[in-house]
Length: 312
Image: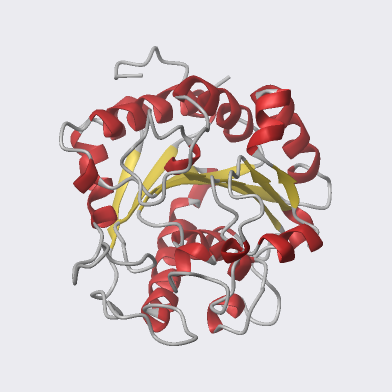
């Protein structure tokens, strides 16, 4: 089975870098906003047989200097999340599977807001080398991307934690965190994560049990009868940096393309998967586009039954 053979795929470009810190020592925003265009240039739309709904772009980057005790570009991230939610909601028309090409990790807020707009109870598979569970006080960078899972479950005092009103975008008990390699790092909210109801399937567990068993454990939570559907977040830094160096915060270890494809395909091809997003790839760190080609290969392997035509 594949998504392409069962239902249409709609692609939305989340051409945004406002949720992440600028380059070190520079007054320049990171170039994650260029990622959707680069992936399109490599033929991702045709290779998935998808319909392209275009890009959602944010306001210009503002907080090159970190605001004390706050989140960089907080108001802009909130506005952008609402705009992205409109595109994701439209993409879901007719039961289509939505693929959001980011962009930094904070786009998960808009994706969840759009995917749950019809009042559905949404689950979340958060596949990432980092927990992203910090508050502004814990984060080393002040980037929404370092806090976006916390914000999604309503942790912290930011308005970004209440984009859907009094209820969080997703309940902690409906979240599975897969593949993190930042265990014990307080600046990613490790202590609070351990005390939460989030199911934490770390990189160590993934290595021990393998992608198929971890996907099965995730689906036990995500596909429960009381959860209407689920969203999948994939951060490119979950891959081994020897495979995917074009990310802002590489962590030693991680998956190869085959392992990530095997894991995510079992989730994405489930009938209650609403969509997924791919984040954190930075074309400015990928001069020969080898990383981009690997990501297109990953998407093709994950979402279709086609033989991949790109680099693995």
